[in-house]
Image 1 (spheres, one colour):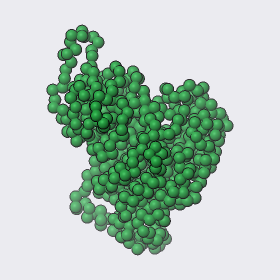
Image 2: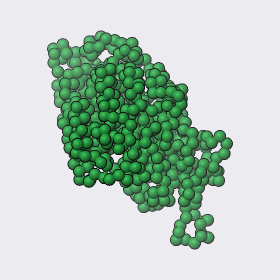
Image 3: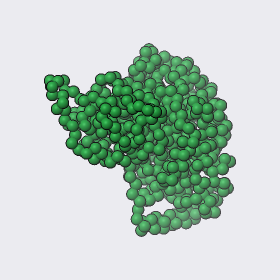
Image 4: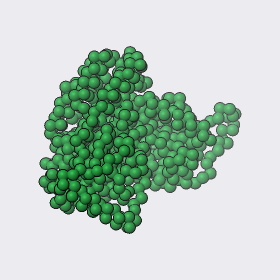
Length: 593
């Protein structure tokens, strides 16, 4: 079937969310059964259910940008009346949001589509980078498609698909509005796309085929969105992009201008934190001092994801990465010097075509030199249609061996040794996969697991680190923090910090290391969405009695902790649970933020 053009006339902005167009205004084809004569085509069954009453199952692959797209599509469908379900069996339609970064992600999509087609002929809608970048793959035959810049029309596509029609909307147009209805997977985390596409032309990257050239949202629209989501109760804002550092170069602004505008909207009590997304080295080299100043801000996590991909200049040239290893070192060294305690995550692709033993040795040396607490390690996967797919491949057994070797080097690091006994402020936004711990992060985005009531989700607390693991640390709550200005003097003394003006540019409130996003499996190259299954859809607050109880427990713990500090003691009670529980996502393999 040919790709269907957007048939709306006028200014090309499309219809508002939830607005239903007549059939002839949305490009559709009735599904044809090749085994039946043509005269029976008019007998294709049409759903008799009222539109907006069915149940939708949404599955997301890939990066945080994809997750944000899914949340926007879920919001529009929910606003129109559709029910959302985590159970594919009870759903009337499956909406699959896909990732094209690596072969395993697309293979998982293929498996799910096949399962949907065989499960009582379940209606399917496929969104995301696979259909946008590879619209003619055979797995997409017979399913409806919504493009990455057409997510604001998902209601129309779903409605027509449920009627038995096949719909394809792939045309590029203006960027989807930021104020569309949204159902967040984690109610406390807003994933905010600041631009789509990029300015690079990496030889291995398929995402460029899907997301296209750089297209940035305006500073005012993004700052306005930040203000709105803070009013909604969001406690963490993740800036998402194919390349955060390239932001604004198409509209005459730059990343520091945007970040300063966003920081100006953050609450003065640091109750909502900002996490800056992935940025490639070329586009932040000229802004390192400005970026460092923002990362020191008490309302911004001292964390940055800067993918290097290889420690060999020869391989970086073959990848067309447009920087050298020394330029990457400049980024890391400068930020480390200017931002106390900053943690920098990076990515490595093992076995890129032409990689020699010497090239790989240079990569290992680079990782050993910096001992990054977080490294996403991926084997090279040739993506159809990319220049790298035509290059001579390194034998697969060598690729696997190099991946295993680098993973062993990385896993031997002990980034959190020395943290035990420290007192830190954390922001709590998640539930660990064990169902026991809550997940918080320090200013440097170190993951801290605590045992506490679910009513503490969305709050900030002062904790004492009681033990450390490879991927996380464990803490005990001393007291909650409602406002920085209301910290008790005893806690200030324990933290060893002078009270700073909230959200001033001169205060660095923490200096702790950064955990790996998801243990050795995610460091083997899992995408951010695959790592983000720990996010919970719903948080049920406790009743007043339980809140009173937790308040009493916290006060008791505070007194005990103060006594231990006075006696130079260290909190006891080592946890034996796996240290990798409940990891949060923070990056992929250099195509996402």
